[in-house]
Amino acid sequence: MRAIAAIAANTFREAVRDRMLYLFVGFAVVLLVGSKLFGMLTVGDQTKIIKDLGLVSIEFFSMLIAVMMGLLLISREVDSRTVFNILAKPVRRWQFLLGKYLGLVAVVAVNLALMTLLLVAVVWLYQHEFDPMLLFAGAMTLVEMAVLAAFATLFAVLTRPILGSLMTLGVFVIGHMSEDLWLLTRQLRGAFARAVIAAAYYLVPNLERFNFHTEIVHKLPIPISAVLWALAYALLLIILALVLADLRFRRKDLL
Amino acid sequence: MADIQLEVRDLHKTYHPGLFEKDVEVLKGLSFEVRRGEVFGFLGPNGAGKTTTIKAITEIIMPDAGSITICGLPHTDLEAKRRIGFMTESPYVYRHLSGTEFLRFCGELLGMPRAGLGRRIEAVLDEVGMSAHADRKMGTFSKGMLQRTALAQALVGEPELLILDEPLSGLDPVGRRDVRDIILGQAAAGVTVFFSSHIIPDVETICDRVAIVVEGEVRACGTVAGLMTDEAVISEATFTGLQPAELQTPLVSSHAGSDASWARVAAAHRDQLIRELADRGARLVSLNPVRGNLEDLLMRHFEGGES
Image (tube, rainbow over all chains, first blue to last red; front, top):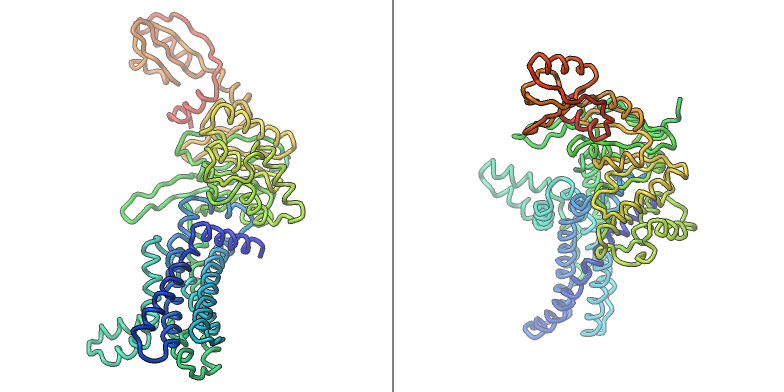
């Protein structure tokens, strides 16, 4: 466990020194400027607009971190050969992968916590309303990002950095279109096209399962079963992606 | 039988670079053993398979066949890994960490008790002469400083077996002397040292025993003195009236001069050379036994004079 924690801490420290947390500043600017702008342009409940914009921005910036860090997560260690120092010590390869993954999740989590707290503060500023469900939305985005980070780790092991990042981005985009893909398979006539779309539907995780933005913004009830199913689904996906990554990395020659 | 700290048996490794590229057989049944307390040199030209062997020992690559044991344990055993200190060919370190942070990270990976880790790090940094730069980011280090820090991370866990890949290459004379002294100091303290090099004087100075590796095989192994005794049976003949290239006697090495030429032959071919020179009308000026050195031995194996 100490080795995993040490690798995760080192990954986190490296990301912080790479100024990865500065993305939070980008989010802050988008949220503050966007809130003001949409507030002026929109007739109706301004708080809903701020919440909606805030939650989407949090998800977007968290995804950026997962994609950008996934770009270098493994390749930097392998290309700079710092991984040699680690693997020559009493550390299993799966421990190395898990440490890198947890480091990535930690960076996303810290950024996400900062962004969520800023959103809560901005909502309070505009409406003098503390909405604890925003914290729940932040937590569910973290669950979604934990899934995305697991796939980023898998792609980092399977392929080269740029392609891996594109694949992670692809999982994010297609993962939010799962429902649409399902509808599309029912409407397409060509068997081949239907098979391709169906394959994408089944292979790419359905990230909409972690999205409760509509319920939170419009204060709709959220069934506990939906949350539990989402957590179980996330756990399954994370384990699957990390086990596949380990199977590939376990006997890989590092040159 | 001596206590064996590192045993490599019949190691094979072939790289498969790609679909349309030829496979590269790097290790071809390489075997050797390193005894407790000795400084063992792994000498060979670039591309001989030294780094590949070390990568196999440290589990950075997976050998196709063969076995490796460290302190009697399979090299994949975590306890075996806990007993080694490894330094890579070039100092691969994290540029965002200071020397102290890097060594702390390594100590954590080794599972060292946290209580004494700080003191151990200070002691090791002092040993490699890096105390004054302990808190500087490694991204600002010179090559020599990086090399010393990389050596420190190999020493921090107080290993029984030090595995050093080209530890002296790229250093200035002062750095070389310092690193050499550290290696000898470790050996004096009872640590077994296995180090690879293509720099022959380093091997001659430091090592108790040497393995000469060429094209993925160990071609000779023994004490430096023992290998040199074998080399001393070479004779060097100086002659005129014939070019070395015209000789049919197998030569170890030769040089064609405008006036006189010389050729070196193994003991088994000395009389044949004398007869051939006489038969072909050449004049033998001198014939002397030559004290060979490791370089001659390595070159002889490298050029395929002996296998």
